[in-house]
Image (cartoon, rainbow, N blue to C red; front, side):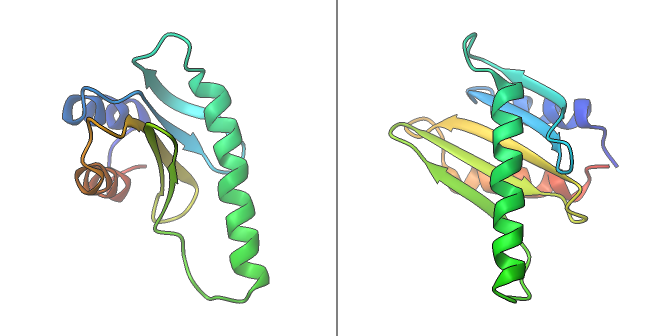
Length: 120
């Protein structure tokens, strides 16, 4: 198992050009560990708002009786990709923001998958 701080460090090592990354508690929206390469990127605010995205999507899945789990959530912005990957228990998620031009989405998703698998 990996701690939130260790997870953030390892993701930063694997994706050094990332814009921001955080391990977030799903229930509270609190960033347990985070890092931003951009001074004006408020990762704590992003974590809180993205928690609401996760909660609303979980409610929608439940209301529609889909019997599905969220693998990840992708937000495509003008020049950024934001990916949310839930832990297997769903109690935490990793939020990642990257530059769309500099990052291979498949690689980023694979990195998140490997880190959520060992997140405690």
